[in-house]
Image 1 (cartoon, helix red, strand yellow):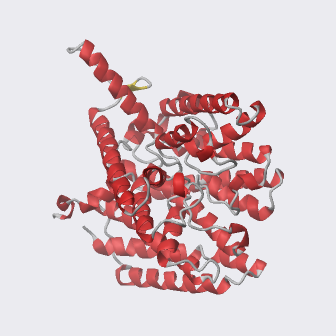
Image 2 (spheres, helix red, strand yellow):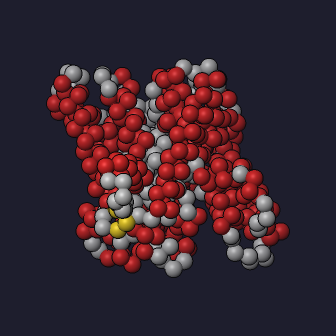
Image 3 (cartoon, one colour):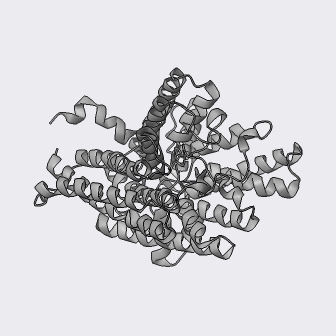
Length: 482
């Protein structure tokens, strides 16, 4: 274990993060909203801590081992989540407590979108920008983690990238070096963000709102600058743009990389995970629209507009809202909420268990049924025409088992704080899947629950974002044995 290298890397992360305080500082000065000092103090503190973490070990050149990678991956979100609390606490408005500030910061970093804040329209513009920016930076961090780091650590089937990437992408990294991989992904991510912001602006959003919402749309975070979320704009065109970019961001970014490099889109339609993801989305959309129309909740046009938007928003784990789906009739609140458990594709900014894992669990279940009928048959599980290694299937099943156990433990812990079953179930599901909105007491925001519940949910967000294994492996005694 190279703790000196880990300290140096985290120091660099903190120094880089301190520079991200500059844009909201500029916004604060532009709008003269009174939060400039809060950002300048936060920037100085984070820069100083990062510098003194890096300085003693600046000459250390050892390479990170696999075990170091687990620690760095976990500490990346925890450390930056803590650093991100400062503006929320130091600014007079909102002036959050430490528990609330950490919850809001980590929710942004993990692109969960659960919030403890209300009256967003009355907050300083710089704070609103900062919230959106956290989700955008967190989304990019997730992409690099999922595409460049987790496959090498062998996390819960994420090594599928090595076997299932199209054509020349079959190496363990998209390009020979992780830094080159990250650079290519940044270009794609930034390009999507600019395109999304332009589309929003042309559709009628102000420049500020267009940029702010492009951050949380491409990052699939769901933060908004208004309490009413996307419903504030009451625009079918804006909602259609949001749906398109949410779906694009929910696809595997290695496919976007391939499309960018080789100027083709054919591979999207050949990818097993994409086909399964779109099939699930289509099925959910049909059920939602028909149920809303048949129950006279909306006319047919309204059922299509609001049903499709909420379905895409919740299923991709973005969490934007144009209607309160928690009060929709019959099975719809639970259906939409269950869609978030599947989430986006692996290697996307979406949360959930990931479509590829659900597909593999389904295929494995079918294989076991066939084995009961033909006990001696050799029946491989395939993605497309390629068989999936048993080691990967075991890893996926291990992830699924840990996911269920984690969900149960966190739900019981929340109920112990006094929350009812519906609220506890949906809050844990929402945070573990990095969705944001829940049911019951947390359908609108998380500001009314206790600090203890917020800390439990903050840990749940971290577990969900780090694919559970990355965090749980750190509490395993054998991990720390030399």
